[in-house]
Length: 488
Image (cartoon, rainbow, N blue to C red; front, top):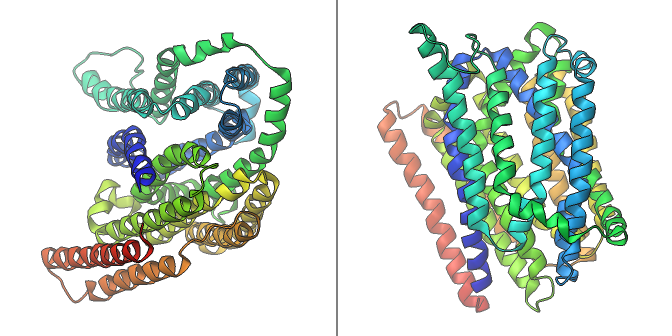
């Protein structure tokens, strides 16, 4: 349990860098959805969808390769510097190419009048890739506090600049005063510029970690890391297809082209209401990967991994209930013109929970050096995503995309579980997971059924609070009894 507590504390600190900052960032959603049209909000979502793909490309598995090789050879400092030099060279090359060909690329993705978007994002993607390895180094060195501080500075810089451009700029303009960098016209470009400036100032804050490139470049190690990381590129690309491609495909597959960006905007806005689940999973991932690798040689590693999964599922289901039972509160964070998509929120919350469980399960192929099998699972998920989106978007729009995401992650979770039993057996407590999930769904449907029977909002909130507390109580009793029986 001491190991679990350490993971929990580090997850909390890493969560500080994402949850606190991103929750403040989440407060920008009402501003963005109020100021921007559904089409502009859809464009914003689409552009960040492209970012996710290129982030995978520019890291090409080096982050996980760094953890893997450092775990085997902690005394070799060249592992980190080799990976970092490689990523810096490839990232700088990427930025130069995309800036030089910004106009043709903008025309290719149907934004011929906004080539500046390509320049902004080329710099954002390249700089973020360069800082990814220094952030991984901080995680490997168990320095979550420094990690959290720098991440939060990055996030809050972006937030403050959003407020500067979107609120202060128009306010001062009405007073007859023009502020620097604001051209007098509100637009989504200022969201991108804010992100770019935040990325730029992050680099010098990691200069101590970046300077470790002086430790040298080992060509032999680099080749080994590339071989190890190559399948993870496929895993990453397939993962990005599953996570973000639907927000790109809606633009091209929705039958009414004039409404496609609006549908994308509605979908993207409601996707943000699954923010609590997404942030928890992201914080957990930051802490879990180095944690899992560090326990790979301990005798009780399988027990630890199974116990981690128990608590992970309970927290995810608690977040699912918190958002769905109090959706009338959460929906206030997006403008009313986006409320037509609220029905996809429960689907996306469960889909993201399945994705989080898959991240837990994926440790089997990383520890057993079966990355190619992990890539096969991700490819399977990508195929499911593509096929279902191509079939369902023309018929059901973004609702089809939500269900495609659900089925994709559920399938990946199930397949990974059964493959893990064969190659790296861990005795997960599957019956408990299924029982908790069924219980949470029953509570969710009870709330929906009585929603129309209780017109008074305050009484409905009280009932939903009781339902949520009943889940906590049942989980607490079961886990306490389980620990007693198994002497955990």
